[in-house]
Amino acid sequence: MYDEHYNKRALGLWRKNRLMLQAFHANLSFSASRFEQSLVEHQQILDGIEKRDEAAVMAVLTKHIDSSGQYWSRHFR
Image (cartoon, rainbow, N blue to C red; front, side):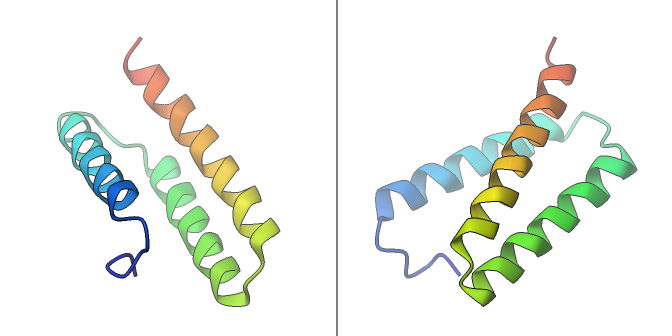
């Protein structure tokens, strides 16, 4: 989905950050409820993209980022 993204620099940054998060997460437990919540949020983002509903995508993306930030903050305190 991202291979043809117009902003290669942003794409590279996203890939780098994704790899860092995966590395950090390798030694941490991941709650089943957060995992399920994350899957639901990802599906909602994809559904919004498919429907070309920018407002819905941004709302779910904001929720996803906030939820993820809270999750990671608890683990790194």
